[in-house]
Image (cartoon, rainbow, N blue to C red; front, side, top):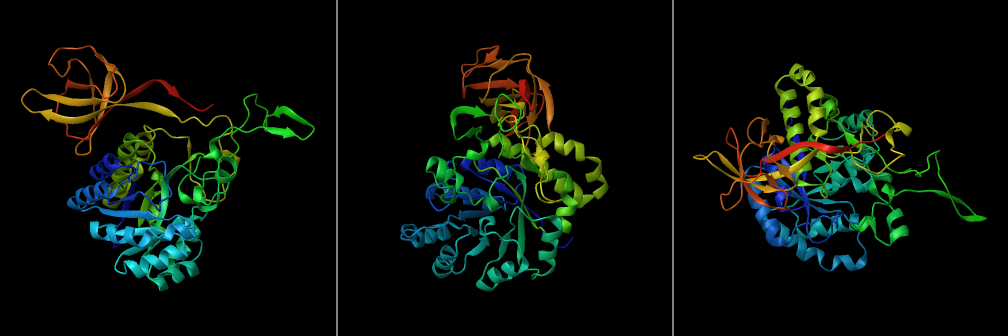
Length: 416
């Protein structure tokens, strides 16, 4: 395969960016303080963005910045200055959906690569060619496209015009994520980055003459989550994605946890590398890949629109809870070769006797039972119950900063 395949990771903040880079991303996408569609993510000010770009580039990883809001008149006053600043920082590309924003980008930073966001409803090759004629270098596919439709687009555009598509993460109920529901119900504009996610809320039906009687839409006394989609997962369909002409496999999740980013990116990195090395190896490990991504919280999995229009099986009507089978319990801060002690920042409670796994960005995952643990004063302790408590744990082999410790959840949340 001649094309370079890119694994594109979400970076909601600086810690998540570093984890995405270390766990195998080829590129990351992030939002600045303005103009992106994830206002609830911590996002990056210019200093953090500069540090993130320097860290990514030191590891040969690209950085893309989202400028994919649907802009109103007042949004344009600060846009040129913002674009010049991110160009100075060294950002590799911007994601754009609004034609007006696109025009300002091309005028202000003409040497910056421009990727056309999924928000622009890119559903055919004529649209792709239109954006190419204006100077776009990449098109992010609308999520409503099938594998066959994407392949047809790929076959009818120049090879230098790249195709990117979402392959993992939360699905939006609205067309290509363009939603008015949030604005209507909560006054928060999803198309300017402030979505309140009303598609995850619980709904009942009322009848006009009986306003206080709330009737479930399905026969369930708890109501129904009629808009609540399962999460997309295509880790066991890598060959088909690549055959369709997709060169950038995009993971959703800028407001997800660092644990989610590390777990999912590591699994996809391994799956892609295994397939490119030996397709038979990849086929033999499909259950393993699914098991690994499922150790991060998820809502059940679907293949979305890739193999036809989703039906009722792709929705979750009984709950908006995640499935969570593993807990993220600690982040490695350092390791002492002489003592064999790892310095851990606690993220969830763990105790002596717990069987844990170390998720490593360099090296194999390994299991161990916690037998020795010390506080910052070197005193032996039996538990780490306090949020972000710093402890030292005896481990059987070297671990590195940003390796993560996890354990099977005692009370996993599961769907019925």
